Picture 1 (cartoon, helix red, strand yellow):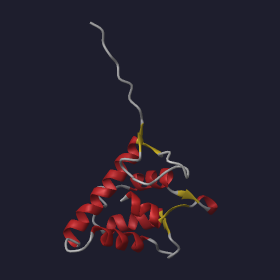
Picture 2 (cartoon, rainbow, N blue to C red; picture 1 turned 120 degrees about the vertical axis):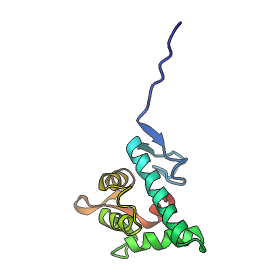
Picture 3 (cartoon, helix red, strand yellow; picture 1 turned 180 degrees about the vertical axis):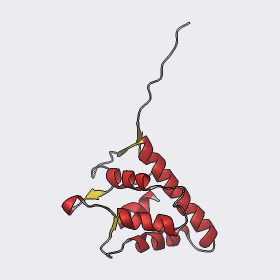
Length: 129
């Protein structure tokens, strides 16, 4: 009897998790590490739980837009790690999503700006959640 080994990969395609995010302008999908993929799923779940409890009579997109725009502290269309951490705590998900989760999302999906400050565009985070 021969045994079959299945190789495990530490990367997941982002397309089923985060539609419309691509690494280039082509249809190539970005890859996420397992930990960041899990962090994205935790963030989505936390936002959905908050929406169901507090925005049940509204469109889901309205809730998400209000959450994301509240994290855009500088009103420049970019969200910082601190902004994302603040909204996570504001929606009551601070015990589900830890700082390392947010840092992983920012590191893999964010844009590195001046002085190594990582931000993520408002429209990109809206597609993520």
